[in-house]
Length: 240
Image (cartoon, rainbow, N blue to C red; front, side):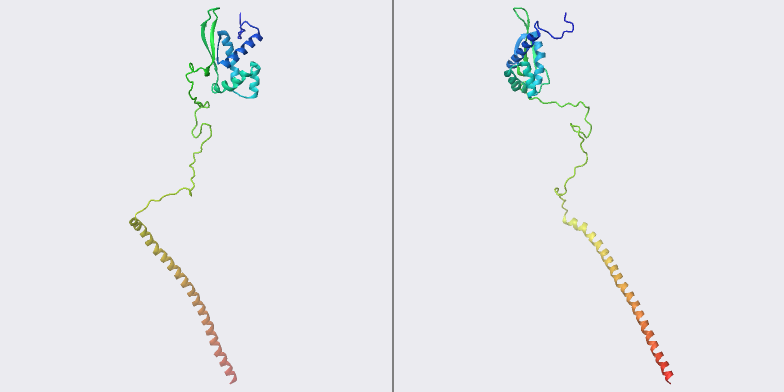
C-alpha cells in the first residue's frame, strides 16, 4: 500500500531516480519536447519546473544551483540563453503533458512532455505581443490619486505672466470717443476746483499775518511819536 506516499519512486532507487530525471530534464531543455511514459512525464514535470523558475533570475547563484541538479554545461547555456528569455513573462506552468496512448509492446501508457512556449501549434498566443495587465488589489482608486497611489494636487496651475500675451479686443474709434469723453470732462472741473482752493488758502493766510505785523509796527510808532513831544514840553516848562 502507498498510504501518504506522494512521490512515485518509478521502481528505482533514489540515486537512480535522481540521475534519470536529470538526464530527462537535459533532453527536454535541449530538444524542447520528449516522449516517455506518463508516470515519468508527471515526475519530470515536478522536477524541472522549479529549475525553470530559478532560471528566470540570471545570476551566478542561480546558475550554480541549477548546475548542481543537471551537471551539464551545454544544457545550462541553452537554459539561460534561449529558454529563460522566452518563458520570462510566464508565471508558471512551463511544460505540458499530452497523453499518446498505450505502447504495443508492454502496454505502458505513453505521453509527450514539452515546453509550452516552444510549441507554435498548440500555443494560440504564439507570435503575439503580450500586454501586461495592471491589477489593483488595494481596492478602488480614490479621487485625486494616480495608479501609484500618490495624491494629485487639485490647485490651479500658476501661469507665468511674462510668457502669456493677452490680446485686448479692438474698439471702434467712434465708440472710444463717446465712452472716454465724459470721463475727461468730469475730471477737469474737479482738478480746477481743488487747485483754486489751494490757491485761496495760500493767498489768504500770509495776508492776515502781514496785517497783524503792520498793525503792531504802527502802534509802536504812534507811542513813540506821542511820548517825544510830551517830554519836550516838560523840559520847556521847567526852563521857563
